[in-house]
Length: 217
Image 1 (cartoon, rainbow, N blue to C red):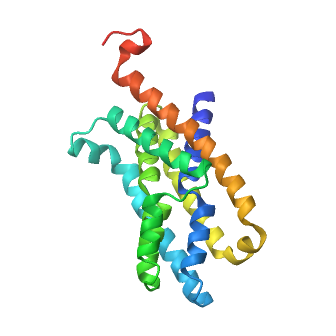
Image 2: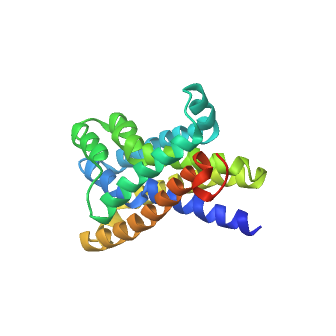
């Protein structure tokens, strides 16, 4: 029971932090500033629905996709840990991910249907970090049983649900959260994400190279 609780806390914290509902909401505000209320709600609904579908697909079928390309889960875990580490460092130093910023700049002038899919759904909400976390966590859940397997998609739905709720109430949130408060929260989440990424890398190295922990290769 304790292992399941620890895994649930890891799943929810890592996916929510990587999805980063607050950052997604701020980007949503900047991209929909000239739209009316109905159009904003449509963008919020469409972007989160598409992001959730993509995230759930990789949550359920991510392991099979890796096998299709001949990628071991250990290699993906280490690579994903490095990716999450970079995202965490950007958050700590209050930088916008280059992937996210480029997509945002490129599609800033597009209409509601365009920006709902990109850059909001991909890569802002469901980006490489979220996909990596979902695949790695699901791989761990399979070894723990049915209850753990159910945790990962629930965590994904929760993270996207929080994002949608914050987008719907973005006007109120923007009024109450200044740049200083946003940077403080973002840096705290960045530190947590760095710790999670290092744990991913450690587990990946231990599994790929048992000799590092005194086991036989």
